[in-house]
Image 1 (tube, rainbow, N blue to C red):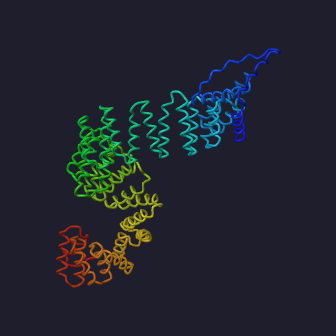
Image 2 (image 1 turned 180 degrees about the vertical axis):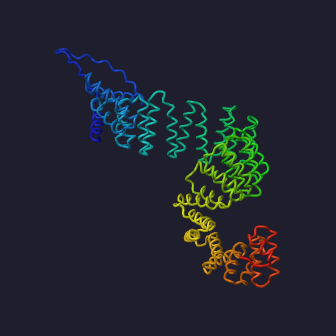
Image 3 (image 1 turned 90 degrees about the vertical axis):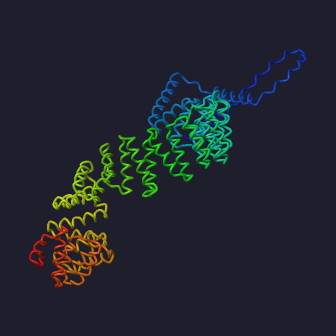
Length: 607
């Protein structure tokens, strides 16, 4: 391919100039007449010389074209058309094969050279693309598309100066090509040649008038040049040229605000509001300016007014509320965030994302019941968001609302049966409802889905330890706790429950003491862990130690189980009247063991 290209380029550049016509011979015997003095030739302009040279080169190439028979011409056209079809199908290799066959028959056809160049460009063969694009331009110097392709090839090779030269030639030599001034200016911008880009944009404006895109780009150039006054002047010109277009006023206000020209920003934003009183963007500009001026009350007022408008897109509101969430909880912002969330749900009652973001804000500021209400409204509008279901389930668990937890996990599992966390909370719900067999079924199924998540797997094992204890399958219960502790030796729930259940069964009491003691050392004021440790000591007949830890626990709890345990310890220490008083206190509190009534009636310890 490269050899063919070189040969063709040599041929294109080496045709001889047009031969001079021979002068006729003078008849014999005649003397030459004195020639008239020739008129002094007019000097050609540079443009005329360039046009003559170009025309001469093209004519020279055309004279050298090999004559094509009708059959060859038809064959070349067929190859070309088929190549275009394959190129549209992005079958570049096959397209190139067809174009080269057309080229072999008719190498001086500009369109064929153009398509070969284009195919090479798309295939990444930039060197051959350059050669063929150059040939296309030489063969048909009046076709703007050939210049554009050549410029694109140069730009792809990061030869920006050559690309700019091609655009310059196109604009200068091809009629009605002034529009490509914009391409040239953008190319200068890409090179960082700001002055050249600016000058080119100004040439375009002289030809086409003031254009929004050009004005904005000129503003960007001025700002990069730290010429704020000129950038603002450009904005004022836009406003003057388009007095009914509020977007130009807003852009000017934004520029003032971005450059800390706050009074001007307020003035221009208020000008926009006079034109469009409900414009939310003007409100947001004012809100940002007032915030930077440490005027939170006015800033929040403007934000709320903006949120009341349906013209402020729901996605924009969500983005703003997400920014608030990043700053929460914050006493100075909590109420404003909640009010904005409420406005959003009221203005956009059919948008699930409005209720979802409201729920997120309420969750962060500890309004979980309200958050769950909004999450459920979001799910009624769009139940396909797993994250929202997960939030609902978490809140159910945190609020200890077992019926809701079971109902919502079952609804979610119909949509997301492969989500292990849903099975986990469903199992927990069944355990809380005193349905351990159902709990085990859900937990075991979910555990199979969590094999790639060791942390979640350990949580399953911990709950399974509790569940199997409830059905008195102690071997599986112990194995589950051991698995949980193998992953995390400091798993507080596993350490506490495992040691407590071992104590209840009177087994491995030294191990139980070690686990419970580890917890008490880490959490010396936790009444639940103190009670567990005391009960292990009680089983080890260390009644004095048990009494000490139970009395410490009772400083922070009035739980009936802890009070009953304290009575049991006092009984073992011979303080039977005090023990009876504690049993009666536990009975009054509610939640003591089924033996509490017998203990009180017989004034005797039962275990």
